[in-house]
Amino acid sequence: MSLTILQRTIALAAVALVACVAALALTGEASRSDGGTVTDVPVAGGTGWYTALAGSRGPARDAEQTACRRILTGRSLGVTHPVLPCGAKIFIAYGDVEVLTEVIDTKLKSNGRQFELTEALAQRLGIEGTQQIKWRFATPS
Image (cartoon, rainbow, N blue to C red):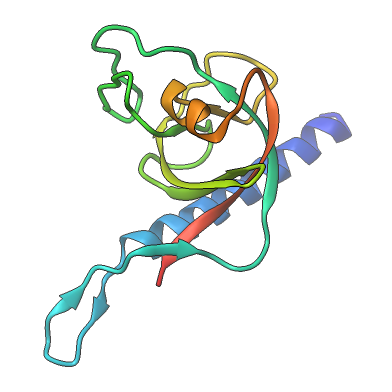
């Protein structure tokens, strides 16, 4: 096994571990003092941003279904990422625009990107072609 492949495997394992921890944190519920539960609104977690290359996955095909069992429309907002789990909530930032979104697919359509954005999300962020974005996990408040 070459050193490059070993480094990539370790990096992917680290991202998968972080994604699992984030998914567990996102699915938890906080307890109230009266015995009920509160579903928290996601907020930006931590202070660090990751960078990645992202671009539009193109317009949704008629009744297109993702690997996360989502049916896409022209108004769907979400991202494709090959490692992050379906439903993981993340913030995506490009320029001065920051959007809370979630993973809706795990199968990239094009090589050379870490994220693919729905066409509606790419337009909201102002992304044309493949651009460097910032992203971070959302965590319960």
